[in-house]
Length: 235
Image (cartoon, rainbow, N blue to C red):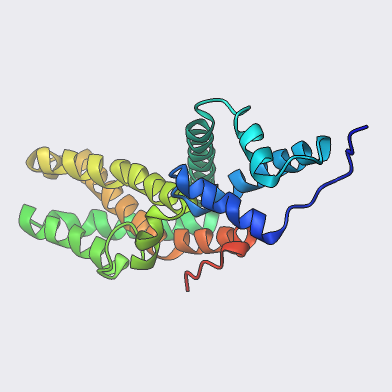
């Protein structure tokens, strides 16, 4: 009769599973942990079902049951899930500007922009907008701290964080700035056009502030909560 008692892998065997994910070209360390956890469970069940198997043979047998695109599909699903997570998190925060205190602050910024813009020419306006962006980001490079950018290729959670911010930035920066540049003279000659420019400046300023000061704190909190075992230091 086969012994089906629970088998616990040793630290050395778990290390071999991490080496296995390296050989399978899994470059994201946070994804490696999930894959190792999944494979370890499968290998333990395989060993429990047949205690005559060696660890390597059990790994070979279990790996052979995995679909051909298992690793690629897992990474794609994980990336999609993390992107949706950041979209919801950032979106919820940005919608928070609809509360009374933030509406007042946003309204004040809009009022100042609306009354200041008529005195600016195209060159001064573009310089002002770029100054706002670079000042709030402190010249460290979009979308955030250099350390976060450096870790982009090592952790999928950070890659999707950066990717989501860049996608949002297209709406806040790209579209707004492009339309204003394209129709600057027309917008400056109409009261509704001044309102459009003031709204764009307000949204760009608020988003720049969020990218520099708010979103990195969200990332840090997420890593400290769910990825503490990676010992990622974003301080």
